[in-house]
Image 1: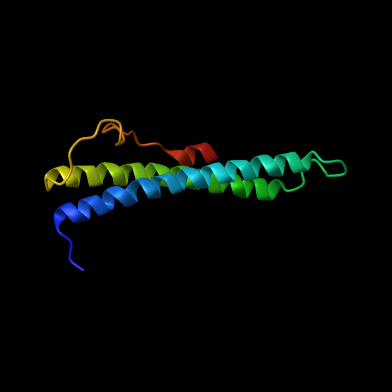
Image 2: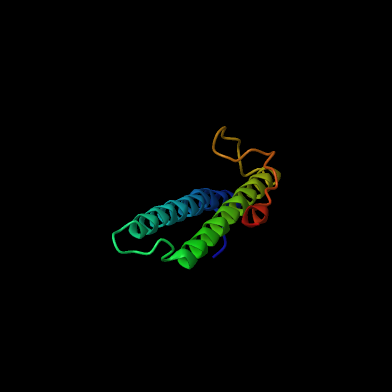
Length: 111
């Protein structure tokens, strides 16, 4: 299946926001799970540190999702740059991440 540039750009334009939103949804779901796990520990008869290792693993998962979001923003920027190079993309204010996206060392947060 061969696509012309306009068709490829349109296809990417549909799928990129979907991929970005899926990461947001995964983070929201994991935050709701974290809340439920913490509330469950407060139930009568449950030890204070019950499920601590599961909470730590979930927090690690959330950090990984945040790193993935950051990488997805970089993908978005790179695709935007490529779109400009091949003249397949017009600027749409507010739809794209800032060109000044800073490198965030999320690994430092786990220390």
